[in-house]
Image (cartoon, rainbow, N blue to C red):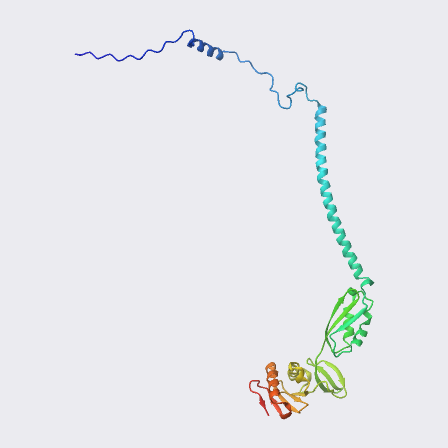
Length: 312
């Protein structure tokens, strides 16, 4: 039987100089010495940041603590004083602005209620039938009164004496003018009454009374008087007429709200109006037919049906 071959040997390590190589025993001896060295306890505290420096060994005295506290209080008071001063200034600014506004309002009110703004002139606007001088004279007791203190009830009482006044409005124009804007009533005709002939408007308000009817308004013949629907229809018809036709009307009659009849004095022709409904259309139809057929050659216009006007 054949014997196995021997294994190859590893190469030999290089030779080391015994004088330069460290000894393992010496390294182990050094580690053991460090491990077995006695531990020296630290009995003194580490110096802090506050106590480090040339005076670190000096103790903190009570006087220094009080001085630091006083300095802190002074700094705090200075900060509070600065903040308080700013707030005080702001409050003073707002208080000054408020006081100025109050003084301005008081001065304005004082001037407005003083003779500086008293009424010196009264102007009546919108009066065409009224006597303007008479109205201004009736309101003369307001002269010398401050504009805000004009007595409206006294003005109303003075204007009640003028039946033609339907409504009014007061307008103050500083410093010394008082304007009275008047809306007059529109008379529609004369009604025969026990006192004579009374001029009335569409609401039946008596405006004037005379012994005979005037030429400025037609004579009204209405069954039942001003409290009946027939008079309301007459008033509506008369207010819907344009000025050029209304001035030609000399008489108006109605027994019911549906049979209003007009008389044109210049030609003595009649206009059958019917009811007050569709008055605007009837006005247009009447104006058109009066142009093509003048009243001088016509005895009657029937516009009760504006779409089919009848001329006789």
